[in-house]
Length: 216
Length: 309
Image: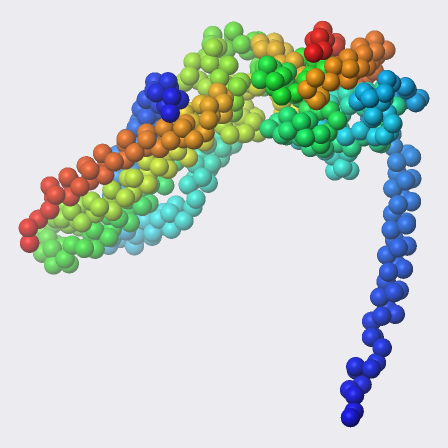
């Protein structure tokens, strides 16, 4: 276990790298996912089709292939950018599909009467979704969104294989591969790193669940 | 009682099976004849003079191998230009040629060398367990390995170098990378990836799991340079159809040695003698030119040999 204590700086850098990617992706994927969920329940057929097509395509594609398309497909087509951008955008696109489905299930959990009442007092579809339905739906989707967030943090390890250095998982290849440190303690350190991120995140979800709970 | 007819009848397939056996024998005989003919017309690789029944002190490794008339050599099967197994099953490359030069000194024909694949992690084990008589497999001499095996040579001095696009003129060596703000690609968890950190800021280092992805990133302009041992880079230049070039300023030294059983000083000295002789009469240069020299600009000279111990 000396390997971990001797390389705390390296692990800390990796932790920060992973947090940076995950923070960006969490915000972006949440926004994109909510917009997509709006598409999927929209009364406008073309928007519904776009939402359905997006979820069908992206959710059923292995993450590795989505990331590959960004890291190698775009440069092939003449679009160059940093691998960090490619990785973050790829992971956002992928995660948003899952966020969308979680939010849509929350919208379905809100009684139809709520939306009908909102429309009957003259709110547009957008207004009724934004002001009446979504605030109630969010309560129901906090636990599934927590699941999606945890999966996203762990998926960020795959981003490391597409040219994005300096995240937690790549610390293991530096220590184990290049410096020849034994694998077991090195990877144990990586696991601890992920737990340091995910366990507090899980607690945060619990707090949010309590905070938004309504007494029925 | 009536016995069913099929029980007393002779087995219907027997004559046929005999016929088949004869056919198989004929085919085998033909194959052996063809293989023998194939061996006779073998012209691949450099032609080197085979020693005619050399004599060695009894009990030495050389005496044992010369007596047997055959040798087993460990090499890489997947390293272009050094040790690569071709579609015809033959091993081609500089390492294979070095093995042929050593074997020639023992009076052994190239056809009597059996090549065994020894990936990096299996080289010491193969030597210690006697699975191979010696190993020529882009095998860097270092103190850690010297505790397990002995090395003859070195027969080649490799080193970490930089590969760029053919038309690149701004990157001329490791020192020019920072000034050019160049993005440099290597493989995560590799020694070259660690070493390059001295010359490039961490934010400009791109890491992949295999070198082919680095080559792809260089081609599409995602990175400006790829760095690793020049031997690996030579293979990448070769497979790129010469769209890339090597800068040619190695900044580390990786002496490649021939791995033998630990403490076999006599065999080590014998191999060193063969290398020196091959270097003097031009066989060493010829071995290089027919393999790695097809891609590399310059032909190396034999490095100063390390003392045998």
